[in-house]
Image (cartoon, rainbow, N blue to C red; front, side, top):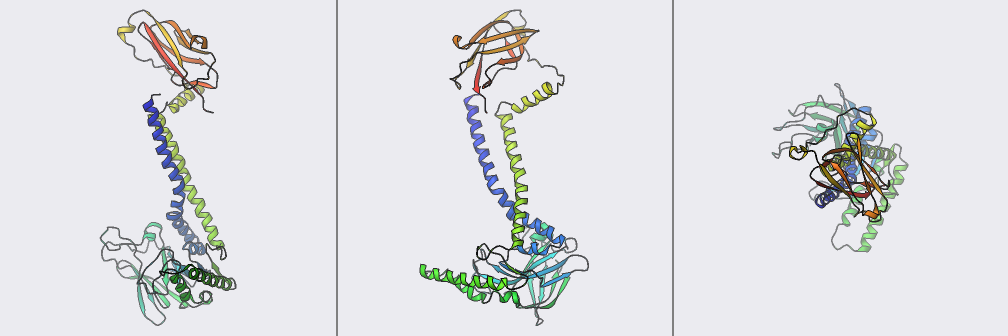
Length: 436
């Protein structure tokens, strides 16, 4: 193999294998974050497994008993659960609850609208009036947005991403959004109320579950204190101890409250069993999506390399399998010969040498045979003769090469067809060590 080809092969495999390693490390996480959860939620909603859907929304605490659940006449429905959620990445100074930031908690009702993909028309690029109208216990109506993406880039939101992609709408009604909930009305793109739901009881963010979290606002003040400039390490330690004490009290209260659960990465709080089961499903499915892609990728880069840069082992394998194993009859295609040279009946002195630069330790004998017209021509290559042999052969094409050599070694470029032309022909065959 020429040095330029060796260099190209090395560069190709370093580059492609590097990309393959990146795929191996990132694809499972990508699928687990961006595609699989929505698939599992959609499946769970169709099966009525609402708790799995709830824990995949990742509240830090939730009540397993629905606060509101109503099925619509045309199919589908809406369901809400009492939840307390932690802020993961938000830092907004003008929030109604007052600078919600990472680590703060907020009360809410979390759930889904499901089973209405065929009957709820919510996409429009102009004048889209899709919304959620919430009527409070006092009769006040609050309009909450549902649209969350801009399809045409004109600065106006046109649709609901989860509904377009997976057929469901994630709802999260926070205490800062509404003071209470009496009924819900879902309007379509024209502004017409298509679905409505009536709460059986007053939903005012007051219940045994919410009581378990005590003074959430005081806890959020502790979180905010950690972000103040000039805070000392002693002050930070005291605040963190106060946060831990609060969470211990919450855990103790939740453990004593029926149908309630906590879900946190904090080992003292623990992970809800429903979330643990859902996470295992996500991991399994994400790997199931990523692994076939990665395998196909590595197979593809090897095939490309073998055809463009390699020694065509794939083609040789299929030739061997079809013609040697399956014994499919075929006619050997002989290379075109030069009329000027082979038009004359003459002999050539053919010298065959071995290139042992990559296996300097080699010291055995080698025998190489070719055939033509039923006659065998043998090159006996010995160390004593510097692995060089010369045979007098008639000008022509010799086929069916065979090499007798120690199985530890193999030829790299032994010609399938030995073309003898001119009065002197010289062939060099490179010997390498077989890969184990």
